[in-house]
Length: 463
Image 1 (cartoon, rainbow, N blue to C red):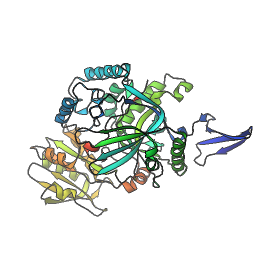
Image 2 (image 1 turned 180 degrees about the horizontal axis):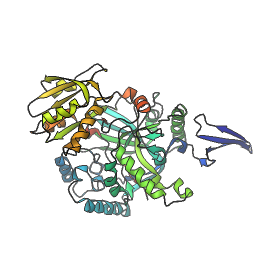
Image 3 (image 1 turned 60 degrees about the vertical axis):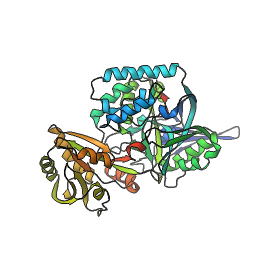
């Protein structure tokens, strides 16, 4: 019998010979058996998909944190869905959070979840991954549906956990989301998590042989969402290929700062799942915690090197803030500002500034301005602006975070408002930046425009 220690110092395995076979059992640093996927913080999942009789175009709706200032979008979605089964009946669009009917909405969501399950609406695909392809316009991107271990995640800014937040987590956003999740029997995720697979072996490797995989679904999406299709990954050889790919990434991590999974979209939903799990596990034995369904969260993994994965900046709109008040606060966040009046939003979006110069744009009712920031107090423009916003919010002003330059321009050009246009960040150095500097300021980036965000489709039982 031989004990061998992993070079990341996180586990060891026992190798011994029995009846001519070499057996290997991985054990963690406390001597507990580990599954080969679990040491890397992920596992296959039991995934639920509506039966073939359900219209998936009406079933799938965009993430609840989109179109937060556009109730008309959600009203049109309600009209389109009608009485058909839909994830619209299982989520809480955030544009309605302040309407005062949260308790009634949540109770209805939970009743509908129970009803869908009791009616036998779902087919269950056990112990599997889904390979997914999303096409929107001329662009497409690949993903892998998998369950991530919430015990391996932290939202703390300076965390060195295997799974971690990439932007500041707004803790005040967790309690209302917990109210939605804590009694829910299903999770329906819009969470997208990044991996850094420069050799494109894991997800792209599966797609190269997708003709040999079982197609699970193929559907158009509502409201210019494009289309989405998925294939079942459950054959032993395919699961092993996925395991080997992640093991390669895992073994190349810095053991002092091992970032394997970086949150892309949906960090607050993932943080909510973590918070709920922390509450649940207090009442469980160690054995019960091992495979409790609430310990894991279903997500879509995406390779940051996928050319179809575009990082979009998340812009800001200030409501009822006089321009002079905004500029006064901005002047406190830097030692110098240069202003250039430009013709339109396009003149701001097309800027290609020297990386050493911080810049952003803003619009009011009557003008568009480009601002260069000299000697800023934050490393990136989003950080500089966040200092301004935090100060304005503390004085009672309102801000919203907007996906898309057109919506920002429309809202920011309304009387009394200010739209703030932020530059995109470089995804090529994204993992390196998180490892070196910790989480970015909250709402720094988005993976695609609002209509390109993940649509709710797959479900998983969490009770």
